[in-house]
Image (cartoon, rainbow, N blue to C red; front, side, top):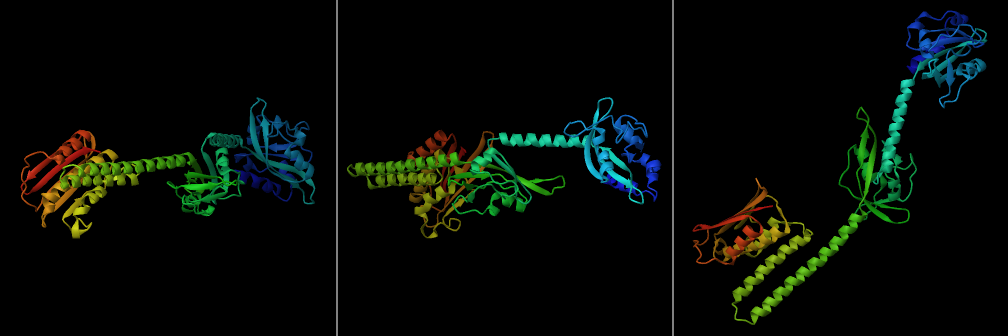
Length: 480
């Protein structure tokens, strides 16, 4: 519409060689156009107008009347709201200076009090000798456009107000990485205020990777998000302020695209994780102290038991069995320690239990006598410790009386995670073969009692052991 309007005034100004025709008889097609048009003579008297002008003005001015000069509107105002006398309208300016006015915005008030915003395009009309004869004004209603612009500005103000109110550090950039906005939380995290439109990628004074290596700004997560047009998640970085203080944070840069999908910028939220890092350091210190004390306690128990047993009439095998059980417990503690007492890997526990019985096969169980088959499973501390002790007893019996006591014996331990009505569970199958013929024991040993107490009572699971002549079989199930 603006292009149509801005091109009509010059066209009318060049209408025929006799410029006066424009003032006396305008082209008929102007009544068919969806824009308002009128003409004034050199003194500002209105010479003609089309129906669109009448609609926009809300009245019909008197042609040639000295009281109806420069404009047919009832009243005019600047966009600021200040009244605009007709003698100071854009048309009056063109007739006074002989220069065009293009794209000027004014507010029209109709006799009924309603108002409209119009954009005017006015060109002077000269005769062949260059004398000013008058001017033509092509103008159109942009009220809805202005309302839409105001709504957009209000939406942007609310959006920026929302971002300012958020406690998280947030900033935006254009597609080239230049910072276009940041809130107070971002300025506080950075420790300074970067220059809008000049600073790029991130407002931090300096950046570092979590391991302490310097991170160039054009390699930071925001730069990656913009260059690769994708969101970046799971990264950490360290911002150094001008005063030297450092703040660890997690960034969440996300590209912004227009309706066509074209990249127009990005928004980034920086989450300060200083408190979390301090808590992790305190937790690590506590865990280190706990692990140290547990190791000392186990060593003390082992020493006390060794001294007590050595002075009594206790068989050597009993002392060795106790020490092996204590060692199995200690190794599982080590696995939990490395994982900060969050979990232990089942296969790693089994590797440690079977390490003394591998012989020349080493850790290659699939080709050796001990075969481990199952998906990766992480166990909580309690089931990890209980299972380690149960499996240790089974392995000890297999080495003394079962498949591991014969050169051709094979031991297979398989496990699978199952879904049941009560939730997720773990099934472990213990199968021995190729060893001496198995006989039903005459009495329940420590291993059988540990199996019942540990799996059934402590872990709320189930355990069945079968002394098949071809080899011991054991099936254990427990919730995980």
